[in-house]
Image 1 (cartoon, rainbow, N blue to C red):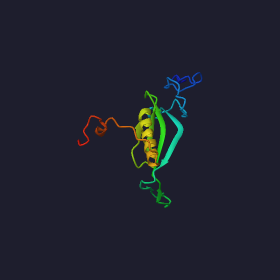
Image 2: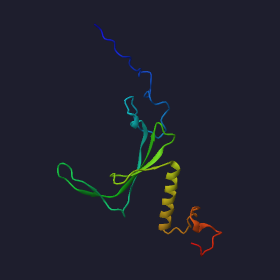
Image 3: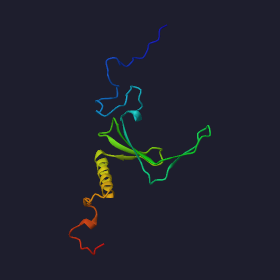
Image 4: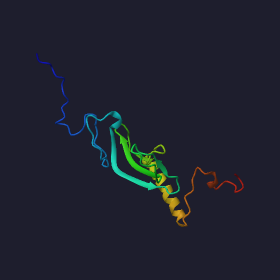
Length: 150
């Protein structure tokens, strides 16, 4: 007696997983597979930036099962690119390297704003005499406002 096998998905003719309907962004370094779970269907880049924050408390890494540690490691932020296949645009993800804080999910525009703010603050701290741009949401930047108003 022969048993009928279910039809298999043809994969030889395809160059991408069945669920991927559009090409990857140029920055995507992720290998996509038919077997990827929905949450894992994301474009990711090997690029990341690591920034050690020297004024933050160190992160305590607990002991290993072998009894090593604990270790104190610098507070480190990591920035990387990520885009789920269902998302319209990539996000810049910022997180603490040792998972002490939640991730920050920034649009490219927000990442640029944060970057510009950080660069402006660093320039000012280094003695650059350029005045920072006025923040339109800051009421003290209203030229029609009396200097005595608070």
